Length: 415
Image (cartoon, rainbow, N blue to C red):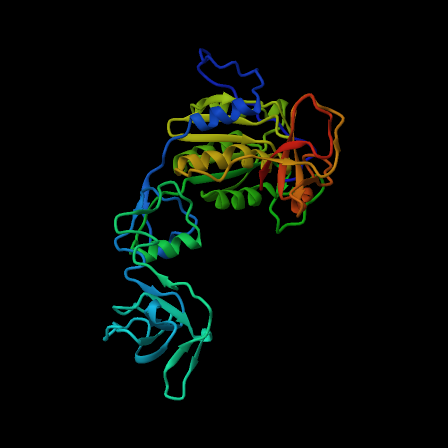
């Protein structure tokens, strides 16, 4: 959602005996710790294999069989005895995948075998088809100097009872294959948190409309919907809240009742329309912080009520994008038991970066290159959402630092 600048959401907490000094600007590290310390593991549920990708395992998955379940051929060829490789081999049977060998391999014998087929008794290696020649009598001769066994041994991948996938793992397509291979057709995963998304402001219109004078299109909501999905949550869009006390109260009340996390994007005007504090007071929200020493994204609010978590995100799109990436996504990950995936990496700068103001920690959009370095993307400020379209991550520029030289390392979060 494009606005002229980040609009602060003014939220006050009742009762006044709260120990939090809400006028204090917390550091990013403090804000992240406060958010993550408020986390709790969400409930679990069983899902079918087609629905398991992108979910987080809530239980270890144990193999119910040996993998492979028997010694099998790793290629098309001939199963034989290694001691017989210098002589001519009689072909006694053909063993396709899925068939049970009918004959034992004796000295001077072999069986034509297909990839994945069970190794017959007596054989201790498989020779490749391309490393053999057929004699006039229909027998086989090994013509290479040496060969590997070319046998996938029973249980070399996993034994029955082994843990093949651990709790907290984010399931990708390759993990679905592992689940299928061990017969886990209904894995237990953490439920996706329900995340409400609300945009605020009389100046906001939906993307399918042409903005009028002093209006802008609502980009934040649709950005946040996509971010919630990618982070593992289940987004529910509650629409645009107009600058009305009653509408704000009703919308927030509904969002809190139906969801685990509420994202309020943007605030209200100061002065006559400054009614949000009263709404939050009435709803019993306990504010943990209201400003962060970060650029962009200073006016970011985090509050809790029971098992509900509420974020007041800045109205400018880069601000809301960054704060979701830095705070909301890790919270969703922790609530769903995810063990990894939201870490920060140290990478070298491929070009120097300068800024005029250095009072706060700054997160700037960067792109990655094949040389393993990061390069600043042209960036005009927190309203410049198009800068993120060409970025692969956001890099942290520490407070008090105006210049980062080529080759110096910075903290980078992938986006």
